[in-house]
Each structure stands twice: as C-alpha cells, then as structure tokens.
Length: 429
Image 1 (cartoon, rainbow, N blue to C red):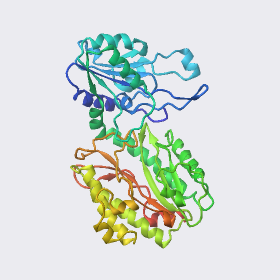
Image 2: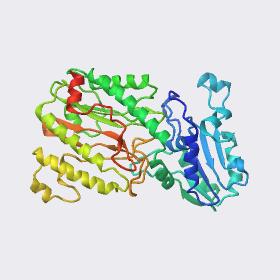
Image 3: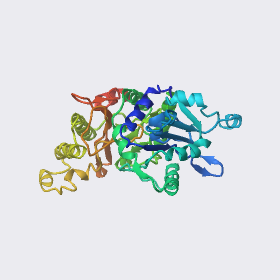
Image 4: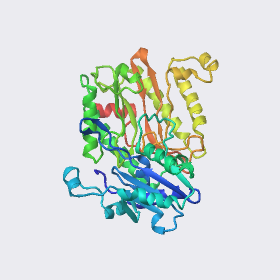
C-alpha cells in the first residue's frame, strides 16, 4: 500500500461499535470484494470493500471477517480469515499478509487461513441463532453484478435455513456516518493532496490545453503524494460540458473565454475527498462569470452554516433551495413570480440547480450515513451548489468537504484550497 499504516485501534473501535448493536447469539460476516476481470488474463486493480476495511484495515482480496461476541470460546469472538500466502504468490503477485501482519493490521488476535472458514463457520453457527448479512442498501447503489457477499448470502440461506437473518447495513450506516478522530485525519490528508493537485493545475491551465492533460496533471500530483489516484472518475468539463453533470470524457480543448469545471478528489488510505472548482481558462473572469460565480459561492457559504447537529437532511435542502432562488432572481434567471407559483415537487430554482447540495463523505465518495436522522457532530458532508446556464455556455459548481461540530460552524477540510475570484485570478496570473 502507498499510504502510511493506520493504527489498529481505529478498527478495534469500529468493531466495538458494530458489536454493541448486534442481537444476542448472532454472527456477522463481512467479505472482501472480488477481483474483476477485463478479458483474457487481465484484471482491474483491486479495490477493497469499504465495510471490511472499516472494521479491519485488511486491504487485500479473499478476506473474511467473522464477529460472534457470544461465542463460547473467547478466541472465536473476532476472527479474520486471510488467504494463505506462499513463495509462488510472493514471486508472481507479492506476498500477502501473514498471520502476524494481519493481526497487527487489524488488532484481531485470531487469524486463520481462508481454507478453514467453512469448517469454523459451520461449527459456530451451531452456537448462534441469527446471522447478519452485509447487503448494500445505499440509497444510490446500482450494483448489477453478483459479489462475493451475494454468493455467501445465497449459500447461507441454503445451508442454514433455520437461522434468523438480519441486516448489517442499518448498523453500518449508523456508525460509519460519524467519523472517529483518526478518520478525520485521513480525510484531511486526502483533502490536502487534492489541494496540491489544484494548485498545480492553476499554473498549467491556459487556452488550448486539453481536458485530459489537466487530468494527467492531477494524477501526477496525487501519485506523488501516496494516493492511488482519483477517489472517483474525475469530471473536467470546459465550456458547455460543464453543464453536463456527470461529464467524464475529458477530451475537449479548453478555449479562451470559457470556464472549466473540475470535480476531482484524491483518495488516501481508501478514504475519499471530493472537491469542485470552476475557473476561467484564460485566468480572468468576465463580469458575468464573476457575477454567477459569486452567487454560487454565496450559496455554498450560507449552506455550510446550516450544517449543525440536529439538522434534518431533507429540510436542509429546502432551505438551500430558498437561498439559491434568491440568487437566481438577482441574476435575472428566474422571477419572483415564478418562485411564488412554483411546483413544490420541482421548484423554480431546479431549472438551473438540479442536484442536491450535500452528501456524506468518507471511505466512499457518497458515504454511508443515516439521511433521515438528525445530523450529528463529526459527520462529514460535501457542500456543492451549482448554477448551470447552457444558453450562456456556463456551468459553475463549487464544492468543499466539511465536518459538523458540536457547536458553531463546520470545519472546512478544504479551507486552504483557493476559492475566491481574487485568489483564483492571482494564482493564474
């Protein structure tokens, strides 16, 4: 791994939080992700399942975590199964974690080889009444392939029909939404790497540069700072492409007079950062670009102030919509009459700002977190309003990652990343 080792006390705390919400006499199992093929003998780079990483820090394939707090044998209350490494694997792929390394990484004392799982699992199921399945129920999930988790669940239902089934997701959603101090440090590192990348491209962008060349500059800086690269597929849209919310082709020329919207973020230690900045290709905002840009910045700053403990996510978005409506009226894009007579299900501002303002951040870019419960301190949210005006060839979005505080305004993990018109113009001059 490129990142510095993470103290296993974090993973021990995370497991303790999960175990505290388990039913009596229950087992929870978490599987690593598959390695996916691309054709012939090629595979995609391995990406660990965020749940098992959150609970163990084990960052390799063919890994299983078993939690059974009521196991009769204390050594069976936390077990990590890892694939047995050998000289052949060491030569061809690089050695995997041995038992001592797996214990050090995870803080789990009982480490067994993966080949022992079926036998141990069958024995422990005879002591249990309930098994927790780790289903992906994130509100934005769109998984269309069968995972190791899916195959495991299918087999369990076949082999242990008399057991009760429960879901890990509600617990994971609850505990992953509130970050530990160690997680906030990792997220800050990811944001700091993103900052370096952004400052790098500010001196690189000029008329005639291709969007993919900017992508390459970001990637260079990210890799130089122990990141695997982008936390998600980067969006680098110049001119009209900035009005396409998930534009990822990044293959057009950046032209004089246009703006470029850059929605990029570095990952670090599997945690994500998520930044958006929109800048003039030639380094100087026009009067209209500046006017719209400052309107978006105003909405972002005002929306940030609303992220405090007790805030309800849905109500928060309604309030942000009102702030955006005022700005769009001032910009001459909508009228007070349109706001007054708007459809509550599709407010007038949605014509120019059609997406949400905030989502949870963490191991996943759109992280787990309970969106129907009041917000809590140490939750991390993006704040990302935008105004998109296709008829003016202009799309502007600004996005930072912030940590809710017990009292006062959130802490902006991207507070050192330039954002004002004056900062941008000075650095691009």
